[in-house]
Length: 176
Image 1 (cartoon, rainbow, N blue to C red):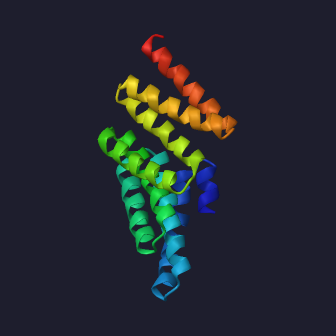
Image 2: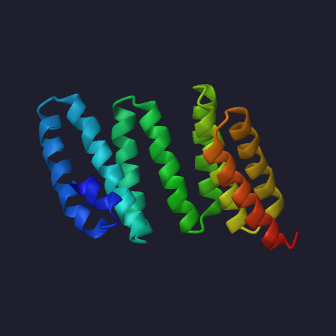
Image 3: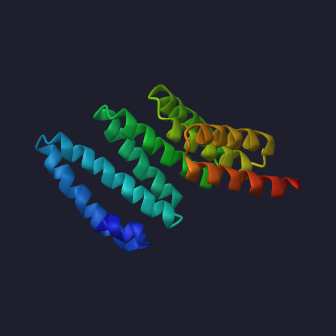
């Protein structure tokens, strides 16, 4: 229910359901259920998303960091990467561009190593957004072009359209 409310744009109402779910999963985890630990980490991520949507970036970061800690304990390397990507987005919104770029670089490396090109393209896109927000248009353009190149190669039309849109917006901001 918490996730449905969150996806439906009712993040504030979703939080109480997600907190209750996390509490219950942690209770099961304390009894030795590792699957419940994973679900507690998922709940933390969902809460982080809600706080991010509400513009409460410090709270979002805390939830993502807690989720990362659980995923690390469970050796869930993909979960760690995904959560670090979400934390990077929060850092971007907080205008902490250097940390955002550092986190995205780490996540990109994970997806490259695991041969997930669509995820690599998505991270290049996010890197482009960070550079754009930091008014580093040259680096932003290169990142969007990297994303576009991968999306074309992978025949990912939605990703291709997104990269082209961002490049168009960037060129407009640059007066091109």
